[in-house]
Image 1 (spheres, rainbow, N blue to C red):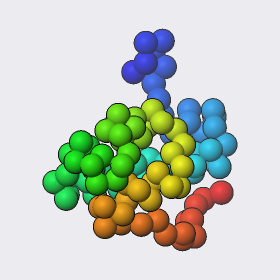
Image 2: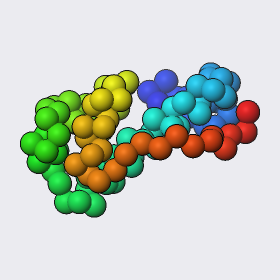
Image 3: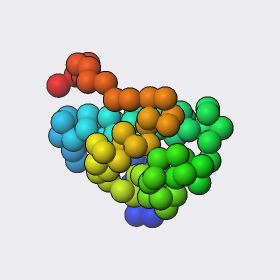
Length: 96
């Protein structure tokens, strides 16, 4: 529950955001979760990923926490390659 007493629900989300904005956010969350999951499954700390990728640990932390809203593709590839991953373009299965 938020400070102002408003409870976040899917209905409230649909009132505040367009279906496209919701889908965009869901895709970003899925990407960040996959990045964090891959790093943790490899047993690599953010500091170790810094050494492997050339991306600073601070930047990695900001990306993983969602503070850095739009990392570049170049940055994402630098992070994903040492984790043995890449990006793939696939159709979105959405409801809008």
